[in-house]
Length: 117
Image 1 (spheres, rainbow, N blue to C red):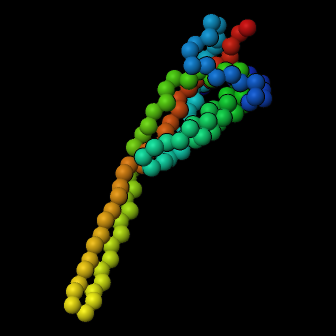
Image 2 (image 1 turned 90 degrees about the vertical axis):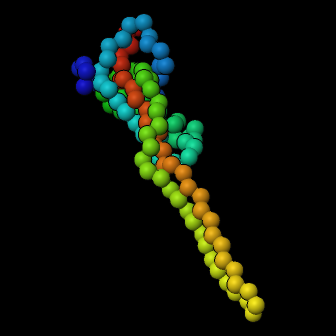
Image 3 (image 1 turned 90 degrees about the horizontal axis):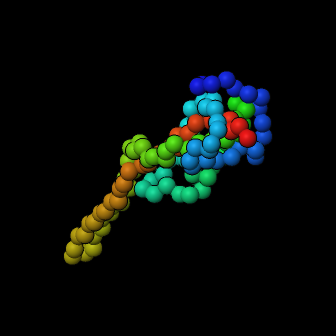
Protein backbone atom coordinates (compact mmCIF):
# COMPACT_ATOMS: atom_id res chain seq x y z
CA UNK A 1 0.00 0.00 0.00
CA UNK A 2 1.25 3.44 -0.94
CA UNK A 3 -1.83 5.48 -0.07
CA UNK A 4 -5.23 5.02 1.55
CA UNK A 5 -7.70 2.56 0.08
CA UNK A 6 -11.15 3.75 -0.94
CA UNK A 7 -14.50 1.94 -1.03
CA UNK A 8 -14.52 -0.93 -3.54
CA UNK A 9 -15.90 -0.32 -7.03
CA UNK A 10 -16.79 -2.48 -10.02
CA UNK A 11 -13.80 -3.83 -12.01
CA UNK A 12 -15.58 -2.61 -15.16
CA UNK A 13 -15.10 0.98 -13.90
CA UNK A 14 -11.31 0.61 -13.70
CA UNK A 15 -9.47 2.17 -16.63
CA UNK A 16 -6.05 0.98 -17.84
CA UNK A 17 -3.39 3.68 -18.41
CA UNK A 18 -0.12 3.23 -20.26
CA UNK A 19 0.91 6.83 -19.49
CA UNK A 20 0.17 8.75 -16.28
CA UNK A 21 -3.07 10.75 -16.34
CA UNK A 22 -3.02 14.45 -15.32
CA UNK A 23 -4.13 14.22 -11.68
CA UNK A 24 -4.03 11.00 -9.71
CA UNK A 25 -3.16 9.49 -6.35
CA UNK A 26 -1.24 6.25 -5.97
CA UNK A 27 -2.96 3.63 -3.84
CA UNK A 28 -0.91 0.43 -4.14
CA UNK A 29 1.66 -1.47 -6.15
CA UNK A 30 0.00 -4.45 -7.81
CA UNK A 31 1.33 -7.34 -9.88
CA UNK A 32 -0.21 -10.10 -11.89
CA UNK A 33 0.97 -13.14 -13.76
CA UNK A 34 -0.03 -13.84 -17.34
CA UNK A 35 0.85 -17.48 -16.74
CA UNK A 36 3.75 -19.74 -17.58
CA UNK A 37 4.25 -20.82 -21.15
CA UNK A 38 6.82 -22.66 -23.18
CA UNK A 39 8.78 -20.36 -25.50
CA UNK A 40 6.08 -17.87 -26.56
CA UNK A 41 3.54 -16.21 -24.20
CA UNK A 42 0.14 -15.69 -25.79
CA UNK A 43 -1.99 -12.54 -25.94
CA UNK A 44 -5.00 -14.13 -24.19
CA UNK A 45 -2.97 -14.76 -21.04
CA UNK A 46 -1.88 -11.09 -20.98
CA UNK A 47 -5.53 -10.02 -21.24
CA UNK A 48 -6.32 -12.31 -18.28
CA UNK A 49 -3.49 -10.73 -16.25
CA UNK A 50 -4.85 -7.23 -16.94
CA UNK A 51 -8.34 -8.38 -15.91
CA UNK A 52 -6.80 -9.61 -12.62
CA UNK A 53 -5.18 -6.18 -12.12
CA UNK A 54 -8.57 -4.51 -12.69
CA UNK A 55 -10.20 -6.73 -10.06
CA UNK A 56 -7.41 -6.10 -7.54
CA UNK A 57 -7.50 -2.33 -8.13
CA UNK A 58 -11.31 -2.23 -7.88
CA UNK A 59 -11.18 -3.98 -4.49
CA UNK A 60 -8.92 -1.13 -3.29
CA UNK A 61 -11.26 1.53 -4.69
CA UNK A 62 -8.84 2.51 -7.44
CA UNK A 63 -10.47 3.71 -10.66
CA UNK A 64 -7.30 3.25 -12.70
CA UNK A 65 -4.34 0.96 -13.25
CA UNK A 66 -1.12 2.58 -14.42
CA UNK A 67 0.94 -0.07 -16.22
CA UNK A 68 4.62 0.11 -15.39
CA UNK A 69 6.14 -2.87 -17.10
CA UNK A 70 5.44 -6.21 -18.70
CA UNK A 71 8.36 -8.58 -18.40
CA UNK A 72 9.23 -12.22 -18.83
CA UNK A 73 10.87 -14.17 -16.03
CA UNK A 74 12.48 -17.52 -16.85
CA UNK A 75 11.23 -20.20 -14.49
CA UNK A 76 12.99 -23.30 -15.79
CA UNK A 77 12.93 -25.34 -18.92
CA UNK A 78 11.07 -28.10 -20.65
CA UNK A 79 12.60 -30.84 -22.70
CA UNK A 80 10.83 -33.65 -24.50
CA UNK A 81 12.76 -36.59 -25.89
CA UNK A 82 11.91 -39.73 -27.81
CA UNK A 83 13.94 -42.72 -28.74
CA UNK A 84 13.60 -46.23 -29.98
CA UNK A 85 15.36 -49.19 -31.41
CA UNK A 86 14.53 -52.25 -33.34
CA UNK A 87 16.03 -54.98 -35.34
CA UNK A 88 15.43 -57.32 -38.13
CA UNK A 89 16.93 -60.53 -39.37
CA UNK A 90 20.13 -58.96 -40.70
CA UNK A 91 20.19 -55.48 -39.22
CA UNK A 92 19.75 -53.40 -36.08
CA UNK A 93 18.66 -49.79 -35.93
CA UNK A 94 18.11 -47.12 -33.32
CA UNK A 95 17.35 -43.44 -33.12
CA UNK A 96 16.30 -40.64 -30.90
CA UNK A 97 15.70 -36.96 -30.71
CA UNK A 98 14.68 -34.22 -28.37
CA UNK A 99 13.40 -30.68 -28.33
CA UNK A 100 13.65 -28.24 -25.47
CA UNK A 101 13.22 -24.64 -24.52
CA UNK A 102 12.66 -22.25 -21.63
CA UNK A 103 9.54 -21.94 -19.53
CA UNK A 104 8.61 -18.26 -19.29
CA UNK A 105 6.39 -16.55 -16.73
CA UNK A 106 5.05 -13.26 -18.10
CA UNK A 107 4.50 -10.72 -15.32
CA UNK A 108 2.67 -7.38 -15.32
CA UNK A 109 3.68 -4.70 -12.82
CA UNK A 110 1.37 -1.74 -12.20
CA UNK A 111 0.14 0.86 -9.73
CA UNK A 112 -3.47 1.04 -8.60
CA UNK A 113 -4.42 4.73 -8.83
CA UNK A 114 -7.34 7.02 -8.13
CA UNK A 115 -7.79 9.53 -10.95
CA UNK A 116 -9.32 12.84 -9.90
CA UNK A 117 -11.61 14.18 -12.60
